[in-house]
Length: 104
Length: 234
Image (cartoon, rainbow over all chains, first blue to last red; front, side, top):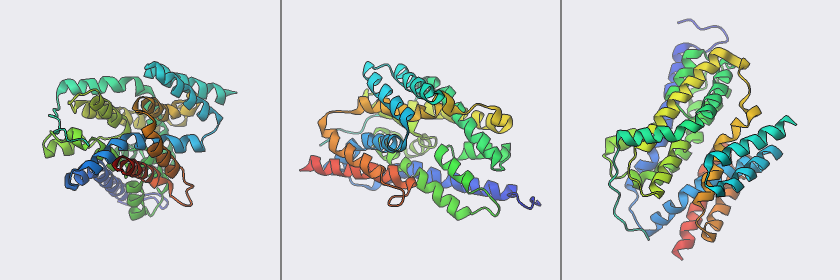
C-alpha cells in the first residue's frame, strides 16, 4: 500500500500498535509472573501490604505537587468529604470546585 | 507476618456484573477522557481504524497519549514500544499487589483476568479484598465495561472531533486523581503508613531531570513499600 508522503502507512501503524499492546500486556501480567517466582516470606508480605497505598500515593502526589490552585482545592475538597464515606459526593465536590475555580 | 492460606478465588458472572455496576458512575468521565484521546489521535493523523485499534489493544490512556507524540513517518517503533512499556510498567505493581488475591484461580484464568487491568478496576479488586470478598469477577467485569467505554469514547472523539468540549472545563480530567484520593483516605491505617507514604510521594515527585516521568509511579511505590517493609521487619 502506498502511503501519503507525510503519512504513516496503515500496516506500519498496525504493527506499532500491536507492539504497544504486547509490551502493555507484559506489564499487566508481569506482576503476577514476578510474584510466582518470588519465594513467600515476611519481607515480601510486608512489601505487598504497603504496596497498594504507596501506588496510590505515587499516582496522586506528583499531580498535586505539579498542579495549580483548582487542582489543590479539588483534592482538599474530595479528601475532606471522603470521610463521609460517600465516594460519589466526595469526587463530585472536587470536580465542581475545580470547574468553578477554572471558570473564574 | 501474614501466613494465611491463599484465598479460594472464584470468577463468577455475578461478580462481573457487580464490577460493571461499580464502574457505571465513572462512565461519563471515562468516555470524555477517551474522546479527548480520540480528538488528539485524529489531529495526529490516526484515522478512526488505528485510533480504535490502539484504544482496544493498548487500553492505557497515558501511554496512548505518549505514542501520539511520536506518531510521525517514519514511525520510531522501538522508542515507541520502550516508552509504552515504561509508562505502563506501573501495571506490574498493580498485578503484584493483587497476585495473592488471584492465586486461587488457574494460571490461564489469572493471565486472562489481568488482560484489562487498569488502576480503576485494580482499586475495585483491592477494595473487594479488603471486604473479604474472593470473587475476581469485579476485576474482569469492571475492566470489560471500562474497555467498552474507552473504545466508544475514542471512536466518538475521532469522528466528532474538537466540537466535543474539553473535559477539563467540567473538572472531568481530575476524576481519576480524586477517585484515588478518596480511596487513600480509606486505605490509611494509621501513623505507620506515614513513613512509606512520605517516601513514595517524595520519590514520585522528583524532578523529571532526575527521574523521568514515566518511571515516577513505579520508583515511588517500590521505594515506599521497601522502606515500609524494612521498618516493619526491625
